Length: 477
Image (cartoon, rainbow, N blue to C red; front, side):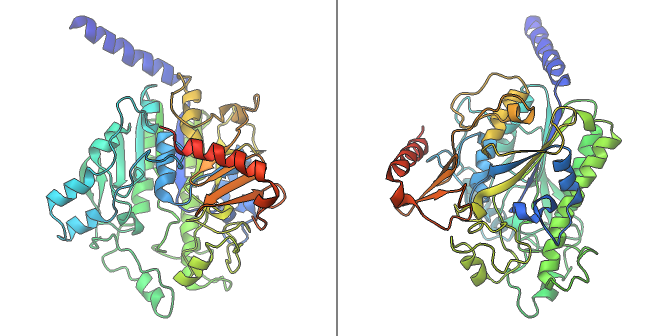
C-alpha cells in the first residue's frame, strides 16, 4: 500500500513538473463564424480589434477547415478523427432536456436518450485527456461536447475537470436558459423562465423585431455567465498550467442579444436584425479582449497559447428561411449578404462547398510564434489533438487522423499535409473533390476558389485517385 501511495505521489509530482514547462492553452471555438466576419479578412462593417490583434501578434492560417455543421465538427475536434469516418460516433437526438423540463417525456425516457450515444472504446483518448496526462487543470465553458445530448459521466470520461454549459445543443439555440450544468449540478440563472432558453423564431418580417427584443423572462444572458466563469478560472488557476476550451454560442442564431452595440445603432446600411447579429459578433470580439486582458493582469500572457477558430463556415441568420436555403447552392457566392461572411466562396454552412467548411484559425504564443505571420498549410479540426500531443511532448496516439501543425507555428521545417477530409470532401493541394449523391465534383482551388467550374470530366485520373483515398479513409475502423 505504501509503495502504491509513493508511486502515485511521484506520478503527480512528475506531471506537475512536466506541466510547469508547458504553456497554458486557451481554445476559443466560435459557432458558425465565417472568416469574412473578421476585420483582418476585409470585414467593413463589424470591427473586431481583439481578434485582429491575435492575428497581428501571432499566425493566421488561410486554409483551415471545420465541417458542414456543428456536431461532426465538434466530434472531430474532441476525438482527433476526421468527420468522414463511418460510425466513428453517434450524434444523439436534440431537444430531450427541453422535453423533460416541460413534462413531455419521463425521466426514464430521458435517461434512455442520454445513454444513446456511442460509448467510448477502452483506451480511446479525447481532447481534455491529452492535457490531464500532463498535469493540466482542464475546463470547458459553453456549448458542451459534440452531439445534441451529453452527460456528466461522458464529460468526465472525455477529460474535463470542470465544466459549465449546455448538455443539449438544441437548448443552446437559445441564450437564456433557466439553468446551465456545472459539474453535474444545475446552476440556476436569475430571471430566466423559458424552458427552451428563450429561443427566438427565425423570422425577420414585420413585427419580429419586437418579439426578439422582448426581455420577458430573459434576464441572464448565457454568454455573460461563461465569460465571468472563464475569467475566474484564469484567476484561480494562474499558478498551475491549465487548458480552457470555450465553445461559445456566438454568433449562432436565432439572433438574440441583450442590446444593440453602439457601433450599429445608427448604421443605415443595416436592418434591425442585422444590427443585432453584428452585435453578437462584436460581443464575441469583446470577450476575446476580456480574456487577453485577464491574462495580462495575471502576468501569464507570455506563457499562454491562445487559439481562435470556428466549427464551420458562415451561416446567414438574418434572412428569411427561403433565402437561406438558396444560399446553400454552389451557385451562391454571398450575393445579398451585407457582411460578406463567406468572402465570395460558394455556399455556406450545411454544405461541403468552401463557404460552408472553411474557418478562421489564428494562433498566438508570445516569444514562440512570429508575429503577423500567415500559413497556407492545410489544417483541419482533427489536427488539434495531434498538435497538442506534440506541444506537450507526449507519445503520438495511434488510430488518430490528425497531423501536428506545431512545426509550422514555430517556424521550423514545414510538415506538409497531404490532404484533409471534411465529411464527403477531400482537399489535396490545389485540388478538391466532393463526392455527393453518387456524383464527383472536382475543383482547382488555386484558379477557382469559388468552385464555379467542375473539371471532373477533364481530369478522370485525378478524380479516381482522390475518390479512392476518400473512400478508404471513410471506411477506416
